[in-house]
Length: 180
Image 1 (cartoon, rainbow, N blue to C red):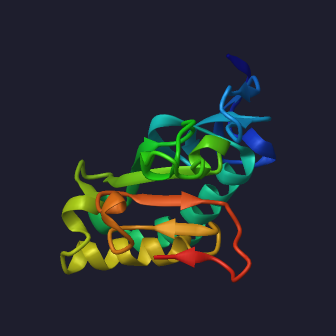
Image 2 (image 1 turned 30 degrees about the vertical axis):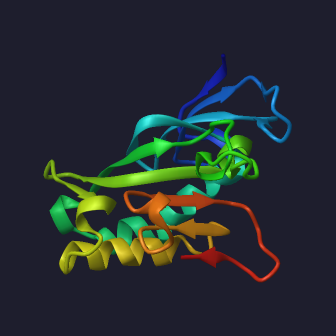
């Protein structure tokens, strides 16, 4: 399925590591990715599982890593080592609800992150740390920092479907970014 390996220059961006994939065509109308990539690493930060995305989403993730993740985590726990990815491309409806619109995941426009792996071996998790004092402050900064690079940012305060992870997608809205 991989077309060619791209060491550190995926999507034309230095620091994105992964592979270009063959186009993903789905039987379900509205799903698929014309030019998908399998992203494994962003600026030296490893993804727990390769994320199948389009390049726009990969570049938005890199912007968030550079502008928010690395500076907001700083040296806490020795700094950021990895991101725990719990979803990327999946041809499904929003929140897996019957009759709902196709999710941005079905277009390669979204990534879900549940935890931030730190160099000291610990992990900041959205589920366990969102409401804590110090770690929660960091996670709330990361959530705010995603608003801009991404058009939609959802977290624990948005709804019951996002209590344990951040949902980031590049869908644009007429009124600007939608961040909850």
